[in-house]
Amino acid sequence: MHVNRFRQGFTLIELLVVIAIIAVLIGLLLPAVQKVREAASRAKCANNLKQIALAWHSHQSVNGALPTGGGYCCAGPGNRTMVNGGPAGFRTQNWGWAYQVLPHLELEALYRNKNDSVVAGATPQMYYCPTLGPPARNEYANGMMHYGACGGSGIGNVYDGILVPSKAFPGVKLTRSLDAIPDGTSATLMLGEKALNLVLVQSNKSDCNNDQGWVDNWDNDTVVYGGFLPLSDNTIRTQYCGDQDDGTWSGSSFGSIHPTGFQVAFADGSVRMLSFDIDRKVLLYLSTIADGHAISSNAY
Image 1 (cartoon, rainbow, N blue to C red):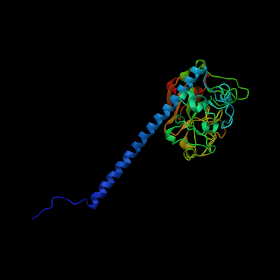
Image 2 (cartoon, rainbow, N blue to C red):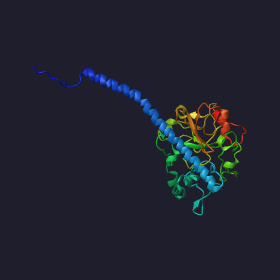
Image 3 (cartoon, rainbow, N blue to C red):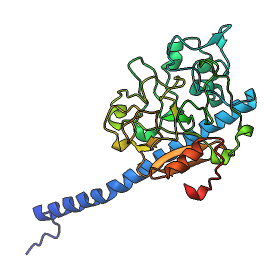
């Protein structure tokens, strides 16, 4: 009698079992893959902040002071301050800090390009957190940005943060220097991720914190404040304009898409993740340069 020692294929039940096992494995692996992807994006985001902070340091080394927040809202093609065919310096420049530090991010050619629309429409990769997706543009074709420099508390018309307007801002004659921060560079915020309406930003639409672009000056697009509640992008479902939990309007808040908190760069160049649950007084003190409170790193 001839016996066939070789099976011709799987039975239906065996095939269904294999498919079920593969589905279970995919279900187990997918969250792990997503966590790895988020960790990589978060690391890239932190590196962006680190490089921008170092650009601020380089700006001071070259110019004797930190960049300024530029003039009063809002900046865009046609209102960059030019002198003798070249960009005006940080003390009188209408465009904001993100434009002013371009030469210190190896983007000198973009900085000196005489076409405002070309410059404003550029998308420097360092100004975007990859977790939020690819760089976006507003309806004016200006490139957007996911970070902001710390303008202080944002409470009242007091310039108490590391970023101050330029002389292009009416009546203001201020600059900041790293060696003139009473609270110390390790206890003063320089930059951070800003709160954004997740639905709008990922659909390439504008909200009030993300409508003028990275060349913007003293405005929500490029300035964030520590006197307001930090927000998770996942919780913002309205046309966010810096509206606070008490229903009042204010400046833009720190925030991010990351699940546990938002990343910031301190004035000493270090980068850390702060929790959304950070004590609001601690965040306020970190955001101002001369509040007189000694804030230990254990407090945040």
